Amino acid sequence: MSRNTRAALIQASNDVPGDAPIEKIQSAMIDKHVELIRQAAEQGAQVTCLQEIFSGPYFCAEQDTRWYQTAESIPDGPTITLMQQLAKTHSMILVVPIYELDMTGVYYNTAAVIDEHGKYLGKYRKHHIPHCNPGFWEKFYFKPGNLGFPVFDTSAGKIGVYICYDRHFPEGARELGLNGAEIVFNPSATVAGLSEYLWKLEQPAHAVANQYFIGAINRVGSEAPWNMGEFYGQSYFCDPRGQIMAEASRDRDEVLLADLDLDMIEEVRNTWQFFRDRRPESYEKITQI
Image 1: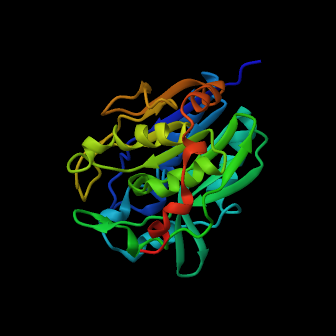
Image 2 (image 1 turned 90 degrees about the vertical axis):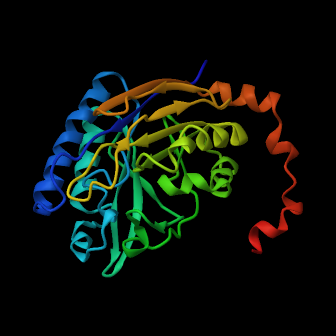
Image 3 (image 1 turned 60 degrees about the horizontal axis):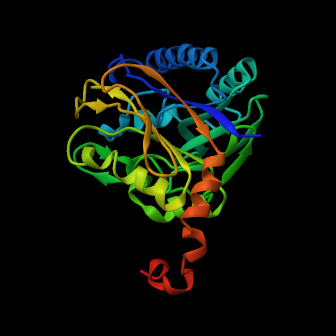
């Protein structure tokens, strides 16, 4: 019997200015995503991934301690509790990226994974934290992840998560493959400019090198008052051969779906024996420098 998974990605704009009350911003974004999650469920999605820090703007465009108050504990904070209820209601696995409060003064950029029964399975914390101009001041907000590269065994396949800037680092993408990932989601927030040409280059390359499916998500629109650039959407799925299977628009809220034939992974790996032919004993400098 073939193993097919219908997966969904949600890209969305933040329509409330970042200098508005935080409660207003979060309420609007959560309400918007509740509706988009419903649409994904109506189209038969078995697993849905949201964008990076989905419940607010990309506030790393500035350095302001007011955003610390948007961090929540996982899994017992209000947003993840709500998402557990939605997952159970829609019988759908959810990958939910939010700003995580670990303890006072310690925060992570994190994605929680919830199964179709509403059970919290675990979380991934973003490993690679940028701090660069223009407007990616993430070290002000996030501590580097410390939970490794977990893979979650679900009814829709073995799911891994890599977050935004992580995608520039092949080492973690390889770890996810070695840990058994069949589908890797990369929720992101990235604007047009220097790295846009890499958007459809790096992640298909990770899919080829590690022979798994990738779902890459990017938000859309320009966020006031920072207006640091256009979040250019173009969320997509690619297969283990690195071919883009489905792609969203550049400029509108959208639920993107694709049917992933997980049996393709075995077919590709039996053709290209990359995991067999690796030489980890000869890569010593990777962990020394």
